[in-house]
Image (cartoon, rainbow, N blue to C red; front, side, top):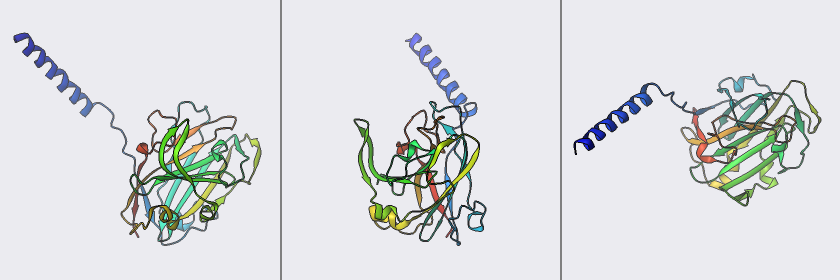
Length: 255
């Protein structure tokens, strides 16, 4: 009995020490959140990073690279804002080993030099993956269930072309970039997503100001000579972008 009490006392000391260590010495995980600010002006979609409509937008960088990435870690900046009719997203990529050969809608653009925006407007109502290569070609799915079956996503719906055309895209690189550009270059992808596109799948979105969506921003280049996979919100050691539990809050402010 006495030994049991001593053991319990020692266990309590160890537990208290662990709690003290976690509270004061363990680095806290950074809380990820992005504020999508309202703009009274609509961006021109001409690739002007510093135009007045974009000046209020916060800029974030994609600093988390999947372990199997090559040593090439491009600097990727992204920002977003909203107007009453939709959402604007702007990527600026300082890159090398740039390659782009997919030109058909819904082609596997992630194999090219590509930027991606995954967004879940309503909790547990599915998410959209806007994947756009540096030449402006897009792949867009509505994914209701990311669980994989024989290596493929289980429940997906390819957004049809007539809806995909609602996304207006600016791209600074040519439609095809081949052979690969090995020198340093900066390329941009800027686009507009009307809220009507989301509402086609989710129903009325209601008042946008104050809503909190969830999502993540990515950069990839699967088949370039120096492949890499980067994200804004960390993937905690996972190699797949299709893990919505690692999406971070996107809060709409202003308006």
